[in-house]
Length: 358
Ligand code: AQP
Image 1 (cartoon, rainbow, N blue to C red):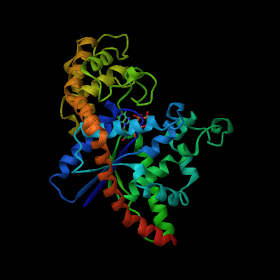
Image 2: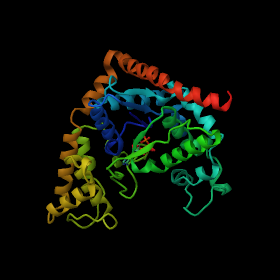
Image 3: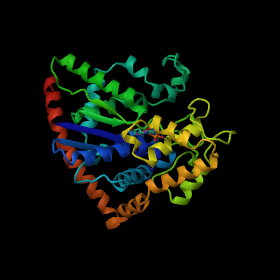
Image 4: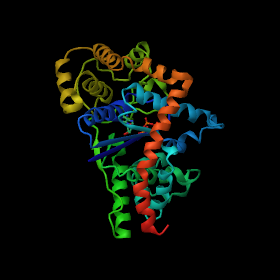
């Protein structure tokens, strides 16, 4: 039997990158699980992870920003088709075992390994060859940012996840989770934790519409850099028409020389057809061939139409679940999921606590 776990941070309304890199896969796994009663699905709004960035923002001084973002993220998950009766949808902080296991894992996890994480180094703005002992770079950084992958390891291990679907950017963190699980099992001389497999999304990283060498991200200051799942058709079109490309007004697939155009082709390949099932790269190359001799304006229009069609209805469903029963519906969904998720952590926590002597 399979246990699938994945999470998304409530750092803003999810965008097309989150959707194609992760959320769409979650829905596909849900649909596939309908045929197979032995698959359990756990999808979490990982609010504790979001504290590493949201709490730092002065705008969240009374907690309202995070409260609202958690609701929006859950509402977006429902709006794209996740069903609270078929998967367990919950706020991470409603299941205290995530934090408890994190501490227990922190006592065996390696600081050296953590300091080599690409995401940590990029937040530190260190070059790949620099060391995290660089005093100046470390000043002001929060411990939570450094230990983020330990919490992520606890998230998947506490639910005994066998498979974790994520975008390419999270692969290194999952490798770390496997290492932490084996290390912990080794220390205690028994198979207490199950090292999970990564289910890599066929969608490579979706890049920013304004800086196509950086990934599309919820927290980037430029709102035109991302398509939100709740954007209306007009906004989607204007953001895509304004996407940064280059001075050559033709269509070709060249990831290094033409990152902006290539990103649009990748998007088209993912959004227009069923290419999530095949190779995005091959489909994107075939599209470039098909559109040879056409202008970038035509390409952009085709991408915009395809995205609008793909996201049709999401915005309306989002508003509906946000407002249903004056907001009480979302609370009920979250509480229903939290109960099931809390129950699912008991087996792991009992075994781990007993082995440790707690
Ligand atoms: N640009 C992307 N392309 C493909 N997949 C992506 N993911 C995120 N950005 C892209 C995948 O979405 C899932 C949820 O991500 P997350 O919210 O947990 O964290 P993140 O990777 O840090 O996402 P953002 O959007 O960039 O948020 P901020 O700005 O808050 O850091 C993950 O499976 C991720 O792989």
